[in-house]
Image 1 (tube, rainbow, N blue to C red):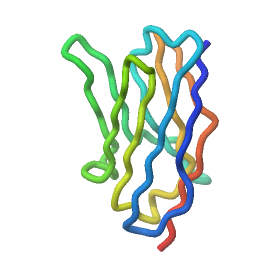
Image 2 (cartoon, helix red, strand yellow):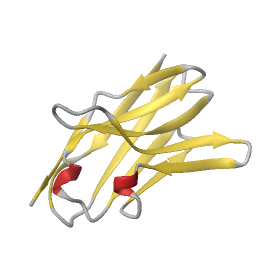
Image 3 (cartoon, rainbow, N blue to C red):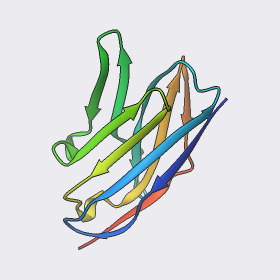
Image 4 (tube, rainbow, N blue to C red):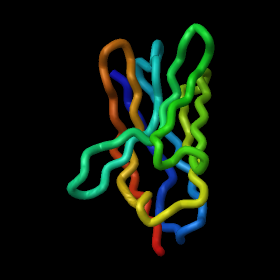
Length: 118
């Protein structure tokens, strides 16, 4: 079992910045991917950003709506992943969930609210 604990989030004005962090504990070896998804009321959970481990090193992928504004980083030794969010927009308002993939299983954090006011 892997446990994910998120921190960060909150309320910010449009154009501002926030940083989310997530730490994995428990049986956290062999996590192949860590990242962030978000979900707004009435909408599906969408990819924000993910870091995937490969033989070529870590590869970062971003959702189209956040490219150029958000940056994901991962510390494999500490099993943590962070998301630096800049130039936030009201449409970024959502609950953000940390995700980890270990073998074929997905693990999720409890979610943290990000609210961007106009």
